[in-house]
Length: 137
Image (cartoon, rainbow, N blue to C red; front, top):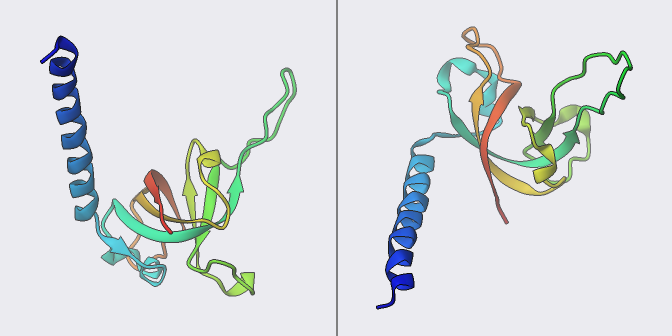
């Protein structure tokens, strides 16, 4: 075997083990539905949820020297419907993320998220922080 192949094998082994472990860890994170979000006391953080990206929000840049109002941090809004007809009746979840541009509107994803803070028992979960995501078909 050449030196290149010998050096390549440990790197390949490490990569395969890393992917395998991350998939195993993702399976240990509970999957919840949008209706589960209505009662925070039964949900452990982190958790997974499947949804469609409804909206992407990026805080607009503030020009140098200007006094701009603080804005809501970058986030996406997800829902359980691919193409909601009545926006007033849909389930939503706001997911805060540093890079909302990595996601596409109307696409379905599996999100691993964590609670921003501890909620009182019975309170609905409305916003979370993104840990990771995976596109779905």
